[in-house]
Image (tube, rainbow, N blue to C red):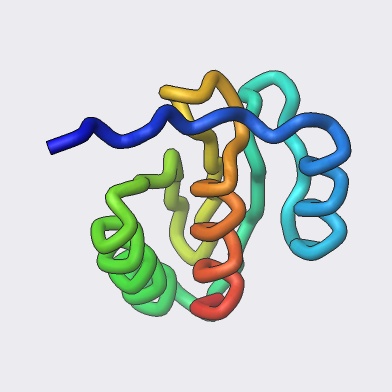
Amino acid sequence: MASPSPVAPLDQEELAQALAALPAWEHDPSRAALYRRVVKPDFPAAMAFMVQVGFAAERLDHHPEWSNVYNRVDIWLTTHDAGGISTRDVTLAGIIDSLA
């Protein structure tokens, strides 16, 4: 069985296009990541959202870096193997937007 092809980071033009298509997301250059904050009505709603994202991330085999404080979920997406933001992050960001 052939090993999967390596994932390449987006170039600046591709990153700009991705950000234009994902207006809720920002580029966090210090973490080489996409960043979004999601605020829910309360803690149970935030946790339910995180569980939904967790299942989607597991299906993609691509997992977010995130933190939760009460009703707030801060999410960073980066592809460590690529050394930055890749199409895998853009795909997961779109799914997160649909769940948010």
